[in-house]
Image 1 (cartoon, helix red, strand yellow):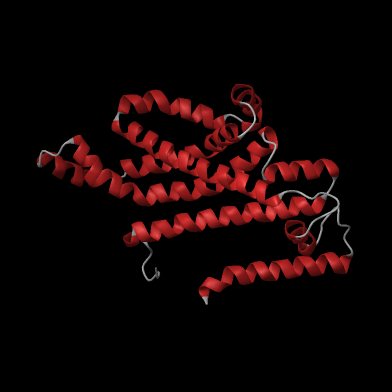
Image 2 (cartoon, helix red, strand yellow; image 1 turned 30 degrees about the vertical axis):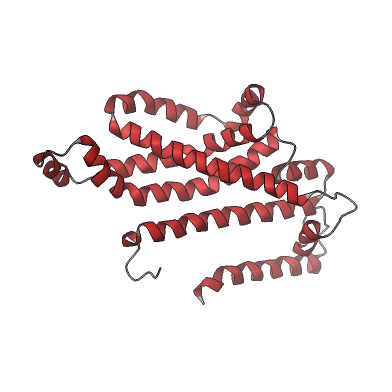
Length: 254
């Protein structure tokens, strides 16, 4: 029953949305009904007959690739920073500076350097989402009890053994926390990239529909984007439960 709670809540919200629009006679250009938004996904539309399959595939590809690149790069950077104090002291201010840059301001430069398309969108998504992965992974790698480190040193363990046997296993809950944040931020980054540097994808549909004041495709795109974010977050949560079941709260079922 607990697995039906989220779909049930979504269904109730959609019913309330549909009823409110009809009851208060809200104009479609302000707030279309969910039925009207979903019709744009499944039925040909005379106003804007988008190739939804092509745009959905483009956005999904960007999200998946951005998440994979960000996960691997973010975890690798965190391990490198934890491995060397000198590298961490030299690099961390740079990462903070990059993370502080407004992506909207940097995007024109990325567009000049990389052009329109997949690569630029992945770079934008990476810049938006990599920092939580680095910070959370770094926190996990550093959160080791001093007694354990002293014991390993007493047993003449190497630095590599400390990382493989202690730091990395200990950091897994922190890594998955960073990946959960990354899963939603990659979706945001991909859509932002499509706003700026793409001629396809759900972000392209949303921004193009804004220019023509065609609200139903905007809401349809937003519903799909939210669904992708929830799905990716759920997959990361599932991987967390499978990989580190000992980290689950007491009494929580798999």
